[in-house]
Image (tube, rainbow, N blue to C red; front, side, top):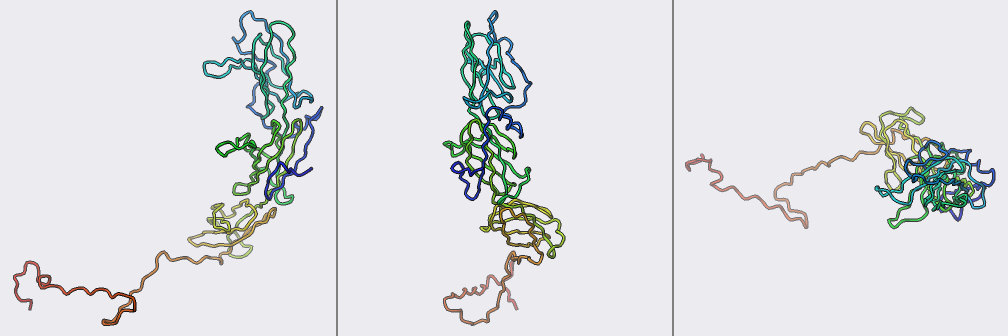
Length: 365
């Protein structure tokens, strides 16, 4: 077991790999784990020829095919998918499927002519052009997949085991496209699952939980070998409780917000016992219950799963929605403070404003 450097650039994470050769008899390493297939299950066919694809009275030739992981390896005996296509596109713009088979080595009966042959082994595959002669010997077709296997797992902290249902891996190509994104090879890979891939470097994204515990690594897959990688997450599982006293019962109907030290929200929940997986760092837990807010700061240590209790005595002061304004009467004649202009006095009402509407100008006495 050795560190993945230089193939991994993890920051705080560490990935470890075990490379198992898949030489003669060693391909059983693929059978010991769950495997991801490249296509949905199809009926196992020794050979299938699409009706009407062979010319009438054409002499069909026997064509044997086998695939190897490496040029000097042994033929793959199971898990292969074979497809033979016509090189002439149909009216839909696609190449018509002439024949297919599943399993190990395949044998087809094909009319003389040109074809494209594709063989896939999980996510690994190769395509070549095949010419079937009208006369003479037809050589066995040997396809070299140049492929290996990748098996992923992860731990929290140094060696804390993570439940498989809390882990998910996505595999991307190592090249970055013009739009800044990487091509997705396969998503939502469960731990301890062998993914068959063409040899090369892949960008792995490991997600622990569903909040912010994400680790990235670049891992090299070698042809003919099974590469096992264990990624180290700097995170822990935290359970929150709002209690009236230390060790007390959790109070139901509580809304939770988890904030980073910078004040950014990373998770929310409405539950008496919310559980979240958080990356290592400092946070604040904010609990809301019956229009009251309670808060506690806490720290997440990698690999140390723990409970965080927020006490009801840790209530946060409520800010009034609007401040009351006090009006103070100032005695008449009091000079204004320096720098303050006195408010202009309202003019006395005119005689016309004092006469009742519709009045005849008689005395108001």
